[in-house]
Length: 223
Image: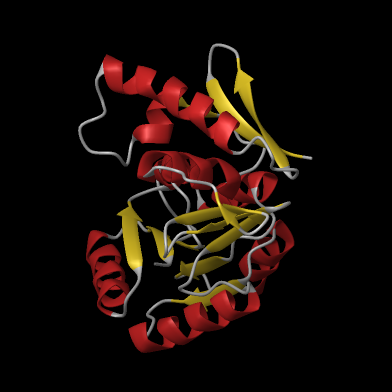
């Protein structure tokens, strides 16, 4: 399922946007400012970002700058009351993909989202490829050279998360934050077991390495 992050400090509008997108088949998370958005992006994979410009603590321009420093491809749409040319120019120069001014028709917003996802070649079927490894999120399958790699659900989820953000370091807690019941110390230690199993099962992969970042966690490094 396509995941969308909405950064908007107006609670009413945030709720309305999230509810409308949810009703149209998207998985949506709403946050109230850019700092919360960055924390969400660090913890989870999203396919598109919708952001206001004027938010407390950190504005949308700063968010766009941080996002583009980490990810050159994720679509970013500004949804803002600022309709002046200078704001639009600044946003596009920072690397955003689309700009809508408030008040916005939610069905029009949907059309813009569909166009952005189409341009980014993102569909509801999730598939990652790294060398001879193919991960299919919908089918929860992993294959190496066309052969099933035999990953467990947890191993698949960790591999998919690492390879969604190659080069990015995840702590053990971040790698299991989606897994209910694994927040304990023993749950954190289980990540090391999963990583060991992944390295063994994916030893024939030629596109990446799972590297240990001492004192922090793990990251996938593309070859």
